[in-house]
Image (cartoon, rainbow, N blue to C red; front, side, top):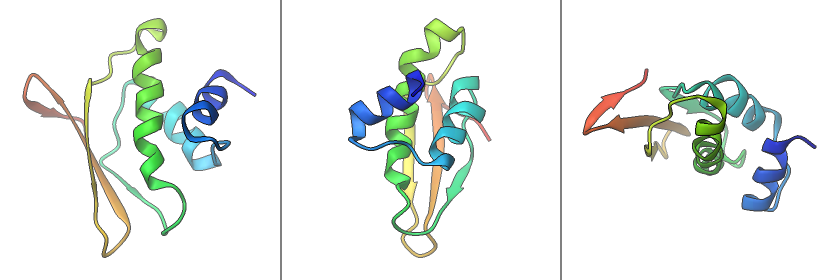
Length: 94
């Protein structure tokens, strides 16, 4: 179990699914924020917040700059969660 998986389990009580690990590794751990996550109901979209929090806590150690504020909006009609981040009141990201 790697460090991300340990933190994720401590925060959520569950092991991360593959998409959650990839979101951390390919996006948040690199200081990037995807514009949206399109996932079916029941696959843990709300965990995006825990994944971002882990990346934020690890960002200084990894030399990555990640926004301190995350905007998370779920479209209940199509299951998309839109993500946005703000630095100094300005929207950044994709």
